[in-house]
Amino acid sequence: MKQIVCLLALCVTALLSVWLVTESQNKSGVVAAIEARRSIRAYKDTPVEHEKLQLLAECGVKAPSAMNRQEWELRIVNSKEWIDGCTATYLNAVEGTGKADYMKNAPGFKNIFRNAPAVIFVAAPEGVFAGENVGCLAQNIMLAATELDLGTCFLGSVQMMFAEPAMKEYMQSLGFSEGYHLRYALAVGYPDETPEAKERDMSKIKFVE
Image (cartoon, rainbow, N blue to C red; front, side, top):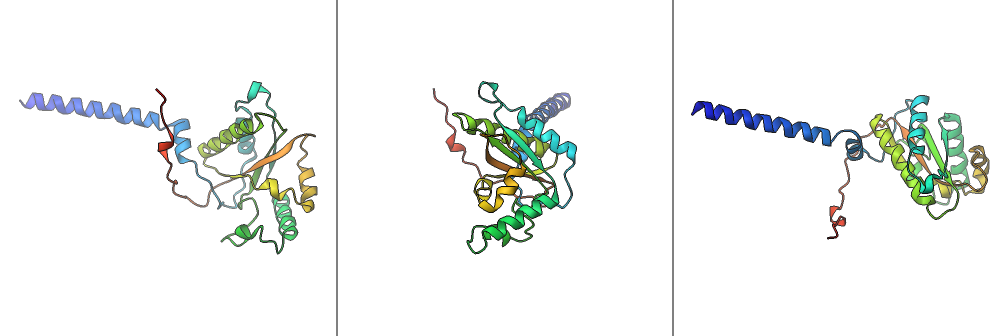
């Protein structure tokens, strides 16, 4: 009897070990990065290494695009002088309008790019699948950043910010090709917060049988 109990115990232990290993594998790599990704709005002052920013951009351009046209351009800015100057210019331009109040009145405000020390700007021409293309690119970058222990925040608001006449010089300094329009920016940096995951509505998922 004792031998049977011991054998059953060993079987249960073995099955549990296999299950734990399988679960661990299922939660590794891309799946783990998807579950760990958060929108970060508080960053440490630690600069992001040039090599990591380059790697993020390369991960971005490895995203799928319609007919593999790769109709996108990326500009990486990690100059504190540029970011601070851009912030000051924009805040002066919209003074009294309330447009930037939600940012500059937030605790620990540093800059208009959610306080990040680096920003990746993305532009694309007009096109049927332009939005889908740059959307895939952004997701690649954000997931790669998570794996590198970096935080990101998607900034669609830069379209309005850089549309201000006072921002013309900064817009031109990005040097996008003719016909390419700024779509969004990604704030990048080492997180100084650990926000909880927001609840997701899984009822949106349905099988069609």
